[in-house]
Length: 376
Length: 97
Image (cartoon, rainbow over all chains, first blue to last red; front, top):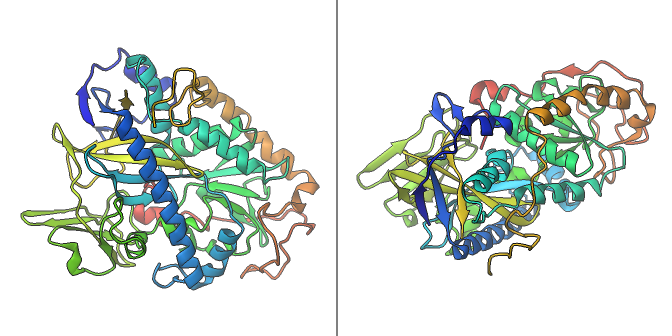
């Protein structure tokens, strides 16, 4: 794995905008850069692909472990939700997509930093935008990226479980560009799979006493929501979810996987696994002297603290009320002063591709730069 | 595993042109076709018979209602309460992860 300097395409901003990717600058900083790219080998792609599917398998076993042993208290999931989560898990309510964040330098096995299982973003950039970059800049090369095709296929699988006239509502925050783009892209792929999709804002979701509804009072039968389950569970309409009158994508069993308590659970279940880092729900001696403290329900790197000899780095935020987990610190590889993290996508049950992000800081966040990649 | 060949349909690498509707023209198409969808379906009484398509088994009553919510329940349209989701974003910001 290496980072290559490349020349941006003439008129690259317009090219991005033509794809509907108009948030290449976020909060005044470049979010997309094509002054560089990451070059992988075919063997490295093999390793990332295998690790991603392995981790997905471990995560499904972790869900079964939590459900079977009713570990709701440990997962900080309201007990009233346990029966509902068990029901949607037992009937295999479908999952569409998730993103594993991996520390990988090309020499050592990929290590799981965290799993963005519920509301992963940077999807459109990974699936489409970097693909068009490849076609323009490295047409002779390949890219670990079949996300788009696999999403359409996954939606076809969902459609097979729906009545022919089924309508999928896509709920999101429309004033957050990356949320809007991610949700619209999911809707795009659903349409290409033959489904009907209707967009709406999260705040527009209604409850008529029996069903969730949209602004036209149409019952919401299936909702693709880009809104975290742990937030939904604690809000006014949360208890209405338990009526099970609406199907959700991602399903509620993802609440177990988008939860940082997953990391200690995985380490307990599969100690020493090559793709896992030691993780605990206390400040355990086995962490060593270098560790990362993460809020159980946290996002975008907020409230994450890195502690190591001669090193202390922390990111502010509003998370941590539910507690923290501790994970052995695995430094990200640094290329030209940039800490690089691999976002490896799983679609349905298949590894589907990667998106590379980088940042000057050790703690990456949702505005960390997206950098295209290729492999040969 | 070796890299798929040029004519391979591609299990891990894209080989197809992505028929993306997200571009300028596509976005206009997406948005232009949406307002009528819900109106049409919401106006069709049969739609109210559809419950959660993945649902099997006994109905659980809503905490705020003792009414049945299963498919097969007929109902007239009522005015929904709104704003019961979304409040956490005011504290935490983007939902991105």
